[in-house]
Amino acid sequence: MPLRKAVDELFSQARNPNLLPVPEPDLPSEPQMLDREQIQERQRIERQRVLEYNYSWLQRMSNPEEPALLERMTFFWHGHFACDIDNSVLAVQYLNTLRFHALGNFRDLVVAIAREPAMIRYLNNQQNRKDQPNENFARELLELFTIGRGNYTETDIKEGARAFTGWSSTLRGEYIFRPGQHDYNRKTFFGKTGNYDGTDIIDLILERKETALFIVGKIYRHFVHEKGPEERIKALAREFYASGYDIGRLMQAIFESDWFYAPENIGTKIKSPVELLAGMIRSLGLQFEDGLGAVFVQRALGQILFHPPNVAGWPGGRSWIDNSTLMTRLNLPTVFSVQRRGKSSAKG
Image 1 (spheres, one colour):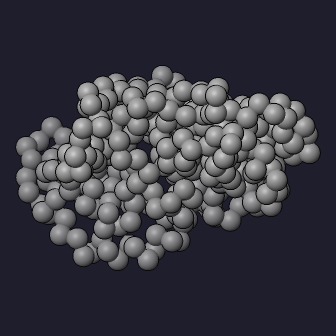
Image 2 (cartoon, rainbow, N blue to C red):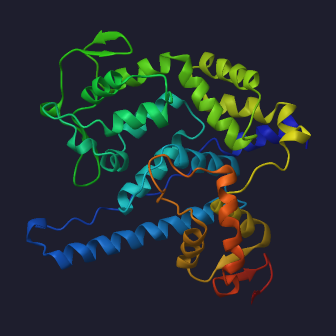
Image 3 (cartoon, one colour):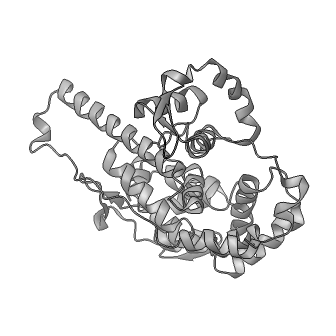
């Protein structure tokens, strides 16, 4: 298949994301009547359900019938918009948001993440109120999610936090704007003053070309090479900015370029544990005898879906080398069964 046709096929397969049905939240009729043990038991059940979605996501990543590019991009954004989740409803909603916007418009993705209940709770925007702003989300939005360090001030963080006051979620895990908690006064952000809300702040961030450069640099390091030519990344960033932050167009430009297939960019990527597992399952027809076995291997190697180490996500790259020797310590036959497609299964 010619390169252009192969790339077009990848994008064609990813065009219609298959979203998961969101489970009905299990809410007690009288939560105030639950004792400590009952609360802990409900939390344990929710953690177990998240682990089940962990395994189902790994299976989807490794399934040849699923759009590989879409799953790869969804996984990339999970590391970028890192969020630790212990609630099944929030986990599914978060995964659906990443998958739906994975190859769409970056602005739409950022706005959706800012309204995602999992992120709202993880970065304490539930407590972001006009009388007492919480700066956690605004800080990570600038530092990790959009423009990167060195391109904003502490004042921008404080004013940005005020703009996101009132962005909250209900007990059912739904986004809600609480007007009584929002600061409607004027804010000064990036030297501009206005009666800004959260979407205005996102737009002001995206107006800065440094944002396109930061995002393109991270995508380049993940998909191409940890050390890319500065001028090449700047050129891609200019195209990304001019396209209005079209993620799909950026990825297509990367995959269709000659330098993507240059010898210096081949065989340089160090797989993360999830990439390693998904590739093994996909290539060898492996299946876990128990979904918890998949989580066991992820935990041993240091990367558990839905549970990044912090809001910065997994370091990636050469940081995985220190974990690679752990693979030899795992007794893989106890957690794997080999199932050849079209043949009977056997241990081993």
